[in-house]
Length: 245
Image (cartoon, rainbow, N blue to C red; front, side):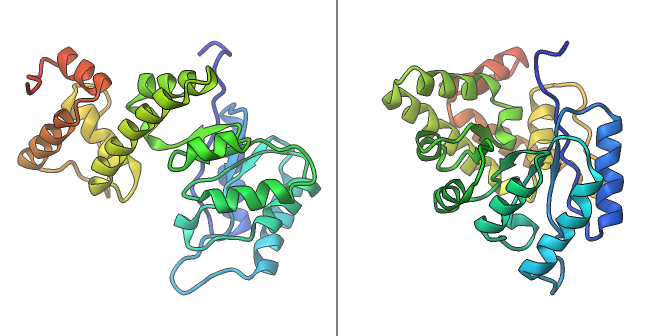
């Protein structure tokens, strides 16, 4: 990208400070601009108390002299209080962003009202129209990997004040997201399935993921093409696939 596009790291959540730091330092050594840091995961019966959550970051962040983003993500097993995230942003100035994966605009509003210094908040796609109007710095999500032009159109329309057309594109992306989430679990499965269908290089899945059988892939492809999104039609034409009338 020759310095034109920031490259950030997103290590998976880790149950111990030692493991979290090992992954963070690997990302820093790799040259990423910002490292995404999750709290201790709510695995099995464990759910951290407020004190345990804060203590985790009070051990991790003093040892990281590099820009980081905090990600209070319910998928890791619980939702930390917005006030706790705001306090960590205030006390640790290497926190340069908060990424709200799978959060609602209620959490966004509470967090923004609790911040004691300016920290960019990046919203999840669902509800992003509201959150951008409320001051979100941008949007995050796995769908951007396969629909970059559609997302770019969405942002361009929003930034130009064409909210009606932006809402139409928002609805298209929501239809796409609702469709692929049947194969979700996590983003890699459906992303690699799309890469395989549209003949992108690097479509192999790492275990424990496994590529579905040919019949399932065909069903997935047929459903994608029935969405009639212009970017998917473009991918289909490039791959030599027949587009339904």
